[in-house]
Amino acid sequence: MNLEVSFIISARSEFPNIVHTVGSLMLDCWQSGIEKYEFIIADNGSEDNTTRFWKFAYDNAYSKISSNQLSNEYKLSPRGLYNEGRVRFCYDPVFSNVGARHNAVKYARYKNIIFADGHIYVKPNTVKYTLETLEKYGGIIHAPVAWGGASMEHPHPGMQYSVKIGEKLGGTWNFAQVSDQPFYVPGSGHCWLAVNKKQYLEFGGYDTNQQIYGGGEPWLDNLWWMLGSTVMVDPRSLVFHLSAGRGYNYNMNSLIHNQMLTAYALGGHKWGERVLITYLNKSGTDKKYFKDLYIKAVERAQSKRDMVELKKVMTLEQLLGIGLPNDCDGSCRGSKYVGSANHAKRPWDILNDKLHGHHLSFVQVFDEWLERLEDPEAITFYNQSPYQK
Image (cartoon, rainbow, N blue to C red; front, side, top):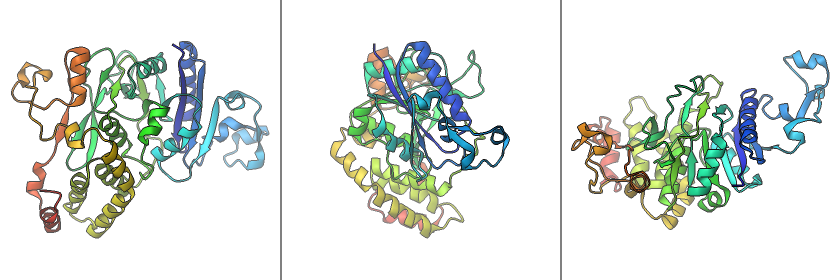
Protein backbone atom coordinates (compact mmCIF):
# COMPACT_ATOMS: atom_id res chain seq x y z
CA MET A 1 0.00 0.00 0.00
CA ASN A 2 1.42 3.35 -1.08
CA LEU A 3 0.79 5.49 2.00
CA GLU A 4 0.98 9.28 2.06
CA VAL A 5 0.16 11.88 4.67
CA SER A 6 0.18 15.56 5.45
CA PHE A 7 0.61 16.16 9.19
CA ILE A 8 -1.14 19.34 10.32
CA ILE A 9 0.03 20.62 13.69
CA SER A 10 -1.67 23.68 15.18
CA ALA A 11 0.80 25.27 17.57
CA ARG A 12 0.95 28.28 19.83
CA SER A 13 4.31 28.70 21.58
CA GLU A 14 5.11 24.98 21.46
CA PHE A 15 8.91 25.19 21.25
CA PRO A 16 10.78 22.94 21.99
CA ASN A 17 8.04 20.29 22.33
CA ILE A 18 7.12 20.61 18.68
CA VAL A 19 10.66 19.68 17.59
CA HIS A 20 10.37 16.36 19.40
CA THR A 21 6.85 15.80 18.02
CA VAL A 22 8.00 16.29 14.44
CA GLY A 23 11.05 14.14 15.10
CA SER A 24 8.96 11.27 16.47
CA LEU A 25 6.56 11.34 13.52
CA MET A 26 9.38 11.66 10.98
CA LEU A 27 11.19 8.64 12.42
CA ASP A 28 7.98 6.61 12.50
CA CYS A 29 7.42 7.36 8.80
CA TRP A 30 11.03 6.47 8.02
CA GLN A 31 11.04 3.12 9.81
CA SER A 32 7.62 2.25 8.25
CA GLY A 33 8.82 3.03 4.73
CA ILE A 34 6.44 5.98 4.27
CA GLU A 35 8.23 8.35 1.91
CA LYS A 36 5.39 10.73 1.02
CA TYR A 37 4.96 12.83 4.14
CA GLU A 38 5.08 16.49 5.10
CA PHE A 39 4.47 18.71 8.11
CA ILE A 40 2.35 21.84 8.00
CA ILE A 41 2.76 23.85 11.18
CA ALA A 42 -0.21 26.17 11.65
CA ASP A 43 1.25 28.85 13.89
CA ASN A 44 -1.56 30.22 16.04
CA GLY A 45 0.05 33.32 17.53
CA SER A 46 3.32 31.89 18.86
CA GLU A 47 5.68 34.11 20.81
CA ASP A 48 8.67 31.78 20.77
CA ASN A 49 10.72 29.72 18.31
CA THR A 50 7.83 27.47 17.22
CA THR A 51 8.39 28.31 13.55
CA ARG A 52 11.57 30.37 13.69
CA PHE A 53 13.59 27.35 14.82
CA TRP A 54 13.10 25.57 11.50
CA LYS A 55 13.88 28.47 9.19
CA PHE A 56 16.73 30.31 10.84
CA ALA A 57 20.15 29.68 12.33
CA TYR A 58 21.86 31.85 14.91
CA ASP A 59 24.20 34.38 13.32
CA ASN A 60 26.80 34.25 16.06
CA ALA A 61 27.70 32.34 19.19
CA TYR A 62 26.36 35.05 21.49
CA SER A 63 22.87 34.74 20.04
CA LYS A 64 22.65 31.10 21.12
CA ILE A 65 22.77 32.06 24.79
CA SER A 66 21.02 35.42 24.60
CA SER A 67 17.66 35.54 26.36
CA ASN A 68 16.49 38.38 24.15
CA GLN A 69 17.49 37.62 20.57
CA LEU A 70 16.97 40.29 17.98
CA SER A 71 15.82 39.72 14.41
CA ASN A 72 19.23 40.68 13.00
CA GLU A 73 20.89 37.94 15.08
CA TYR A 74 19.40 35.27 12.80
CA LYS A 75 20.17 34.17 9.29
CA LEU A 76 18.29 31.84 6.96
CA SER A 77 19.27 28.25 7.57
CA PRO A 78 20.48 26.23 4.56
CA ARG A 79 19.70 22.88 6.17
CA GLY A 80 16.98 20.65 7.55
CA LEU A 81 13.34 19.77 6.94
CA TYR A 82 12.31 23.31 6.06
CA ASN A 83 15.03 23.66 3.45
CA GLU A 84 14.00 20.31 1.95
CA GLY A 85 10.32 21.29 1.78
CA ARG A 86 9.20 18.72 4.35
CA VAL A 87 8.13 21.37 6.85
CA ARG A 88 5.97 24.31 5.78
CA PHE A 89 4.15 27.00 7.72
CA CYS A 90 0.95 28.98 7.71
CA TYR A 91 0.01 31.68 10.18
CA ASP A 92 -3.32 32.35 11.85
CA PRO A 93 -3.31 35.17 14.43
CA VAL A 94 -6.89 34.48 15.55
CA PHE A 95 -6.59 32.29 18.66
CA SER A 96 -8.40 29.07 17.77
CA ASN A 97 -6.75 25.66 17.79
CA VAL A 98 -9.30 24.08 15.47
CA GLY A 99 -9.50 27.21 13.31
CA ALA A 100 -5.77 27.09 12.67
CA ARG A 101 -6.00 23.39 11.83
CA HIS A 102 -8.86 23.99 9.42
CA ASN A 103 -7.19 26.86 7.64
CA ALA A 104 -4.09 24.73 7.03
CA VAL A 105 -5.97 21.97 5.18
CA LYS A 106 -5.92 23.79 1.86
CA TYR A 107 -2.13 23.64 1.83
CA ALA A 108 -1.95 19.86 2.24
CA ARG A 109 -0.26 18.10 -0.70
CA TYR A 110 -1.41 14.58 0.13
CA LYS A 111 -4.84 12.93 0.19
CA ASN A 112 -4.59 11.82 3.83
CA ILE A 113 -4.34 14.25 6.73
CA ILE A 114 -3.35 13.56 10.30
CA PHE A 115 -4.16 16.35 12.73
CA ALA A 116 -1.73 16.15 15.64
CA ASP A 117 -0.95 18.17 18.74
CA GLY A 118 2.48 19.75 19.04
CA HIS A 119 3.38 17.88 22.23
CA ILE A 120 3.13 14.15 21.50
CA TYR A 121 5.28 11.17 20.61
CA VAL A 122 4.16 7.85 19.15
CA LYS A 123 4.72 4.12 19.39
CA PRO A 124 6.48 2.67 16.32
CA ASN A 125 4.14 1.96 13.38
CA THR A 126 1.43 4.28 14.71
CA VAL A 127 1.42 6.34 11.51
CA LYS A 128 1.32 3.24 9.30
CA TYR A 129 -1.50 1.56 11.24
CA THR A 130 -3.54 4.78 11.30
CA LEU A 131 -3.21 5.31 7.55
CA GLU A 132 -3.87 1.66 6.71
CA THR A 133 -7.09 1.77 8.73
CA LEU A 134 -8.11 5.05 7.10
CA GLU A 135 -7.54 3.56 3.63
CA LYS A 136 -9.58 0.45 4.51
CA TYR A 137 -12.51 1.92 6.46
CA GLY A 138 -12.58 5.66 5.74
CA GLY A 139 -14.14 8.12 8.18
CA ILE A 140 -12.14 9.46 11.12
CA ILE A 141 -9.41 7.31 12.65
CA HIS A 142 -8.14 7.90 16.18
CA ALA A 143 -5.39 6.25 18.21
CA PRO A 144 -5.39 5.29 21.90
CA VAL A 145 -3.90 8.08 24.00
CA ALA A 146 -1.62 7.58 27.00
CA TRP A 147 -0.12 10.07 29.42
CA GLY A 148 3.22 11.45 28.26
CA GLY A 149 5.20 9.85 31.02
CA ALA A 150 3.68 6.37 30.91
CA SER A 151 5.74 3.32 30.02
CA MET A 152 5.42 1.33 26.81
CA GLU A 153 4.82 -1.80 28.88
CA HIS A 154 1.93 -0.29 30.89
CA PRO A 155 0.60 2.73 29.01
CA HIS A 156 -3.04 2.33 30.21
CA PRO A 157 -4.35 4.52 27.36
CA GLY A 158 -7.77 6.02 26.89
CA MET A 159 -9.50 4.09 24.10
CA GLN A 160 -12.62 6.13 23.42
CA TYR A 161 -14.89 8.80 24.86
CA SER A 162 -17.98 8.26 26.97
CA VAL A 163 -20.51 10.71 25.57
CA LYS A 164 -22.10 13.14 28.03
CA ILE A 165 -25.08 15.23 26.97
CA GLY A 166 -27.45 17.41 28.98
CA GLU A 167 -25.62 20.11 30.87
CA LYS A 168 -23.25 20.28 27.91
CA LEU A 169 -22.23 18.10 24.97
CA GLY A 170 -18.84 16.47 25.34
CA GLY A 171 -16.97 13.36 26.35
CA THR A 172 -14.65 11.88 28.95
CA TRP A 173 -12.04 9.17 28.52
CA ASN A 174 -12.74 5.52 29.18
CA PHE A 175 -10.62 2.40 28.72
CA ALA A 176 -13.21 0.22 26.96
CA GLN A 177 -11.49 -1.84 24.26
CA VAL A 178 -13.77 -3.82 21.95
CA SER A 179 -10.96 -5.58 20.06
CA ASP A 180 -7.22 -5.59 19.45
CA GLN A 181 -8.11 -4.62 15.87
CA PRO A 182 -9.74 -1.34 14.72
CA PHE A 183 -13.21 -0.80 16.19
CA TYR A 184 -15.91 1.85 16.04
CA VAL A 185 -16.24 4.51 18.75
CA PRO A 186 -18.55 7.48 19.39
CA GLY A 187 -15.54 9.80 19.56
CA SER A 188 -12.14 10.40 21.07
CA GLY A 189 -9.53 13.03 21.88
CA HIS A 190 -8.23 15.13 19.03
CA CYS A 191 -4.53 15.12 19.79
CA TRP A 192 -4.42 12.56 16.95
CA LEU A 193 -6.93 11.90 14.15
CA ALA A 194 -6.70 10.97 10.51
CA VAL A 195 -9.13 11.96 7.76
CA ASN A 196 -9.32 11.92 4.01
CA LYS A 197 -8.79 15.47 2.76
CA LYS A 198 -11.57 15.26 0.17
CA GLN A 199 -14.15 14.04 2.68
CA TYR A 200 -13.01 16.60 5.23
CA LEU A 201 -13.68 19.42 2.79
CA GLU A 202 -17.00 17.92 1.66
CA PHE A 203 -18.22 17.73 5.27
CA GLY A 204 -17.04 21.26 6.06
CA GLY A 205 -14.47 20.28 8.68
CA TYR A 206 -13.91 22.01 11.98
CA ASP A 207 -16.10 24.97 12.94
CA THR A 208 -13.89 28.04 12.65
CA ASN A 209 -16.28 30.01 14.85
CA GLN A 210 -14.96 28.10 17.84
CA GLN A 211 -12.76 30.27 20.01
CA ILE A 212 -9.32 29.40 21.41
CA TYR A 213 -9.94 25.96 22.91
CA GLY A 214 -12.60 23.25 23.32
CA GLY A 215 -15.55 22.01 21.26
CA GLY A 216 -13.70 20.57 18.29
CA GLU A 217 -14.02 16.98 19.45
CA PRO A 218 -17.82 16.73 19.93
CA TRP A 219 -18.36 18.78 16.80
CA LEU A 220 -16.27 16.79 14.34
CA ASP A 221 -16.84 13.23 15.60
CA ASN A 222 -20.62 13.63 15.98
CA LEU A 223 -20.80 15.40 12.62
CA TRP A 224 -19.10 12.49 10.83
CA TRP A 225 -21.64 10.05 12.28
CA MET A 226 -24.62 12.32 11.58
CA LEU A 227 -23.58 12.80 7.94
CA GLY A 228 -23.33 9.05 7.37
CA SER A 229 -19.62 8.40 7.91
CA THR A 230 -17.88 6.63 10.80
CA VAL A 231 -15.33 7.09 13.60
CA MET A 232 -12.86 4.40 14.67
CA VAL A 233 -9.86 3.83 16.90
CA ASP A 234 -6.95 1.59 15.94
CA PRO A 235 -5.62 -0.03 19.14
CA ARG A 236 -2.44 -1.14 17.39
CA SER A 237 -1.43 2.53 17.44
CA LEU A 238 -0.47 4.51 20.52
CA VAL A 239 0.05 8.22 21.15
CA PHE A 240 1.72 9.62 24.26
CA HIS A 241 0.38 13.09 25.10
CA LEU A 242 1.92 15.81 27.26
CA SER A 243 -1.24 16.96 28.96
CA ALA A 244 -0.18 19.84 31.20
CA GLY A 245 2.50 22.32 32.16
CA ARG A 246 2.92 23.87 28.71
CA GLY A 247 1.84 27.38 29.65
CA TYR A 248 -1.28 27.14 27.47
CA ASN A 249 -4.00 29.54 28.56
CA TYR A 250 -7.61 30.03 27.56
CA ASN A 251 -10.62 31.89 28.91
CA MET A 252 -13.35 29.70 30.41
CA ASN A 253 -16.01 31.86 28.78
CA SER A 254 -14.59 30.93 25.38
CA LEU A 255 -15.04 27.26 26.25
CA ILE A 256 -18.65 27.90 27.31
CA HIS A 257 -19.24 29.75 24.04
CA ASN A 258 -17.93 26.75 22.12
CA GLN A 259 -20.15 24.37 24.09
CA MET A 260 -23.21 26.46 23.25
CA LEU A 261 -22.17 26.79 19.63
CA THR A 262 -21.54 23.05 19.16
CA ALA A 263 -24.67 21.87 20.99
CA TYR A 264 -26.86 24.20 18.92
CA ALA A 265 -25.19 23.44 15.59
CA LEU A 266 -25.61 19.68 16.09
CA GLY A 267 -28.84 19.48 18.07
CA GLY A 268 -30.70 22.76 17.80
CA HIS A 269 -32.04 25.00 20.55
CA LYS A 270 -33.00 22.13 22.87
CA TRP A 271 -29.41 21.14 23.54
CA GLY A 272 -27.89 24.57 23.05
CA GLU A 273 -30.22 26.03 25.66
CA ARG A 274 -29.31 23.28 28.12
CA VAL A 275 -25.80 24.73 28.28
CA LEU A 276 -27.24 28.21 28.88
CA ILE A 277 -29.59 26.93 31.60
CA THR A 278 -26.63 25.26 33.33
CA TYR A 279 -24.92 28.62 33.77
CA LEU A 280 -28.11 30.54 34.56
CA ASN A 281 -28.55 28.12 37.45
CA LYS A 282 -25.07 28.71 38.87
CA SER A 283 -24.93 31.20 41.72
CA GLY A 284 -22.97 34.38 41.16
CA THR A 285 -22.95 34.25 37.36
CA ASP A 286 -23.61 37.24 35.13
CA LYS A 287 -26.89 36.03 33.65
CA LYS A 288 -27.21 38.81 31.08
CA TYR A 289 -23.70 38.02 29.84
CA PHE A 290 -24.50 34.35 29.30
CA LYS A 291 -27.81 35.10 27.59
CA ASP A 292 -25.99 37.46 25.23
CA LEU A 293 -23.27 34.86 24.74
CA TYR A 294 -25.86 32.28 23.73
CA ILE A 295 -27.41 34.67 21.20
CA LYS A 296 -23.99 35.29 19.65
CA ALA A 297 -23.16 31.56 19.63
CA VAL A 298 -26.41 30.77 17.82
CA GLU A 299 -25.80 33.49 15.25
CA ARG A 300 -22.30 32.16 14.56
CA ALA A 301 -23.46 28.53 14.45
CA GLN A 302 -26.42 29.07 12.14
CA SER A 303 -24.63 28.28 8.88
CA LYS A 304 -23.32 25.01 10.34
CA ARG A 305 -26.76 24.24 11.75
CA ASP A 306 -28.30 24.76 8.31
CA MET A 307 -25.69 22.48 6.75
CA VAL A 308 -26.37 19.74 9.30
CA GLU A 309 -30.12 19.95 8.69
CA LEU A 310 -29.55 19.70 4.94
CA LYS A 311 -27.05 16.83 4.89
CA LYS A 312 -27.76 14.73 7.99
CA VAL A 313 -28.82 11.10 7.73
CA MET A 314 -29.79 11.06 11.43
CA THR A 315 -30.46 13.56 14.19
CA LEU A 316 -28.28 13.98 17.26
CA GLU A 317 -30.98 12.24 19.35
CA GLN A 318 -31.06 9.29 16.95
CA LEU A 319 -27.28 9.06 16.96
CA LEU A 320 -27.12 8.92 20.75
CA GLY A 321 -30.15 6.62 21.06
CA ILE A 322 -32.17 9.20 23.01
CA GLY A 323 -35.81 8.14 23.13
CA LEU A 324 -35.17 4.94 21.18
CA PRO A 325 -36.22 1.52 22.55
CA ASN A 326 -33.59 -0.50 24.39
CA ASP A 327 -32.29 -3.35 22.24
CA CYS A 328 -29.29 -4.31 24.40
CA ASP A 329 -29.82 -5.90 27.81
CA GLY A 330 -26.54 -4.62 29.24
CA SER A 331 -24.67 -7.90 28.76
CA CYS A 332 -22.06 -5.96 26.76
CA ARG A 333 -20.75 -4.72 30.13
CA GLY A 334 -20.67 -8.12 31.85
CA SER A 335 -23.14 -10.55 33.36
CA LYS A 336 -23.75 -8.50 36.50
CA TYR A 337 -25.07 -5.61 34.41
CA VAL A 338 -27.78 -7.60 32.56
CA GLY A 339 -31.07 -5.83 33.07
CA SER A 340 -29.51 -2.87 34.85
CA ALA A 341 -27.66 -1.32 31.93
CA ASN A 342 -30.23 -1.63 29.16
CA HIS A 343 -29.60 0.75 26.31
CA ALA A 344 -30.41 1.44 22.70
CA LYS A 345 -27.67 0.31 20.38
CA ARG A 346 -25.99 3.26 18.70
CA PRO A 347 -24.51 3.13 15.17
CA TRP A 348 -21.04 2.27 16.50
CA ASP A 349 -22.50 -0.57 18.58
CA ILE A 350 -24.28 -2.05 15.57
CA LEU A 351 -21.16 -1.83 13.42
CA ASN A 352 -18.98 -3.39 16.13
CA ASP A 353 -21.47 -6.26 16.44
CA LYS A 354 -21.05 -6.90 12.73
CA LEU A 355 -17.27 -6.49 12.73
CA HIS A 356 -16.32 -8.09 16.05
CA GLY A 357 -19.42 -9.88 17.32
CA HIS A 358 -19.89 -7.61 20.33
CA HIS A 359 -19.87 -3.96 21.39
CA LEU A 360 -18.99 -1.75 24.35
CA SER A 361 -19.60 2.00 24.61
CA PHE A 362 -21.09 4.53 26.99
CA VAL A 363 -23.57 7.40 26.53
CA GLN A 364 -24.91 9.29 29.52
CA VAL A 365 -27.89 11.63 29.19
CA PHE A 366 -28.25 14.15 32.00
CA ASP A 367 -31.78 15.48 32.42
CA GLU A 368 -32.77 14.84 36.05
CA TRP A 369 -30.92 18.02 37.07
CA LEU A 370 -33.62 20.05 35.33
CA GLU A 371 -36.06 18.97 38.07
CA ARG A 372 -33.71 20.41 40.68
CA LEU A 373 -33.18 23.88 39.23
CA GLU A 374 -32.84 26.43 42.01
CA ASP A 375 -32.30 29.80 40.36
CA PRO A 376 -35.59 31.59 39.58
CA GLU A 377 -34.29 32.95 36.27
CA ALA A 378 -33.13 29.50 35.17
CA ILE A 379 -36.49 27.99 36.17
CA THR A 380 -38.42 30.68 34.28
CA PHE A 381 -36.27 30.29 31.17
CA TYR A 382 -36.69 26.53 31.20
CA ASN A 383 -40.46 26.66 31.70
CA GLN A 384 -41.02 29.32 29.06
CA SER A 385 -38.80 27.88 26.34
CA PRO A 386 -40.73 26.13 23.56
CA TYR A 387 -37.71 23.89 22.93
CA GLN A 388 -37.51 22.30 26.38
CA LYS A 389 -40.88 20.56 26.38
